[in-house]
Image 1 (cartoon, helix red, strand yellow):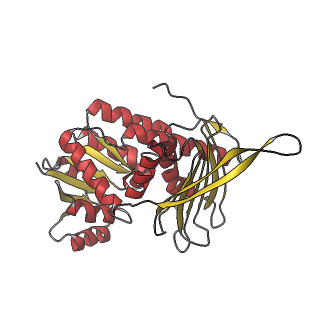
Image 2 (cartoon, rainbow, N blue to C red):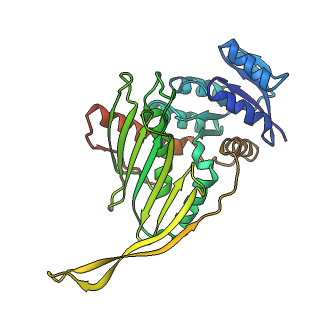
Image 3 (cartoon, rainbow, N blue to C red):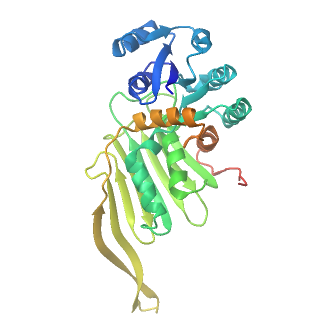
Length: 340
């Protein structure tokens, strides 16, 4: 079975989906839709013979198209995804799922009602270095997670004027960090500033998971260099993922242990142990290709996507809470508990 695919939005990010869906195994990119004729021309230049249209209705009427990918501005996601579901299509939608938790919940319900696949583009969960990190943690190599630090910065023509750094960049940490910890945070705090416009281009956020586990995130378009680093400090070791280093993933067997020595007040001293570093082998592969092929696989098999709409709703809840904290100049915002 070959899955016929339609793509809505072929601009800044959508052009990457054109390239990957047109080459993904198990699928065939049949048509793309965009309001900008220049974007459509670029899509045809990349995939000669590709059908293009400016009409969403035309694309959705095509019975050969079983699944649709959506790469339009985030504020349009709810309306477009609902139209795709009403047309009986499975849907892949880029992050964020929606621009509010209420809209995200509505899309979860709509997907369930239509009995259609709704998968969200949480790209880094398809990155093999992130997958290797998660395997290290699940295998107990780090021990109990103490805290996490994340740096996600860039510099040089990357500042956006249509959204802030929270919704554009911190959203990645809103889905990666809960996967690292294995549960949702209890509360979040965020402080940010807009130095280039009224929209925040720098943010410092903290996610509190309870039981002493915290994550500190720094995201900025206004930084010295481009960086994507995630460090997990555990009771038995420290692991660092640096996307632009070689090797990308390193386990440092460093930890504290109580010694028999005592200070003048009789308190046991802590001893720092360093048993060396272990670079981790990470297979090569393009995350976006893996993500596209996972979507096609889910359409074929009806399996629940690794990044389903219900999973993605949590990231929207976290970012919405961060936005509320920003508005309150750094007030802690509680996240509603969910009973599984």
